[in-house]
Image (cartoon, rainbow, N blue to C red; front, side, top):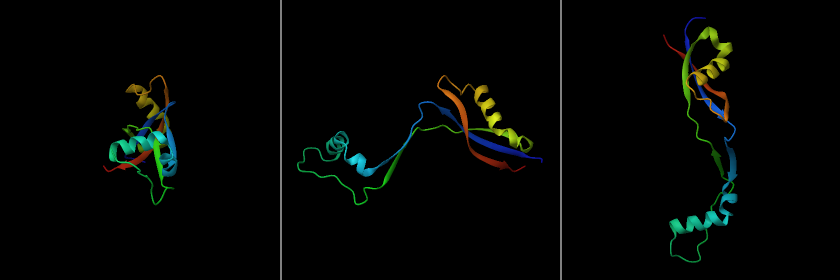
Length: 110
C-alpha cells in the first residue's frame, strides 16, 4: 500500500473527567440554584427554576487538544505506537499523562 494517512490523537491523563449528569440533578443542587438566581434573577423573590425536560443529560469532560501526525499506510498496524512516539517526541506525555487515544484516521490524497 502506498500513500499517507493523517492520524489524530489526544493524550490521556489520570485526572481526566468524563461524567454525565441530568439537568434534574443539577437543579436540585442548592449552590447551583443560588448562583443561577443571583445571576439571572437578582433581587427577585419566590423564583422557581425548572425545565420541561429535566432528564436532559449534561456531559462534563476534560477539554482535550487533538494532535496530529502523518504516517505511511504501511504503518497502519503500528499507529498507536507511532502516536505515543510522536507524543514523547513533542514532550506531550507529562507526569500524570501516560498514554494516547486515537481519535481519527484519514487518508491523505496524493
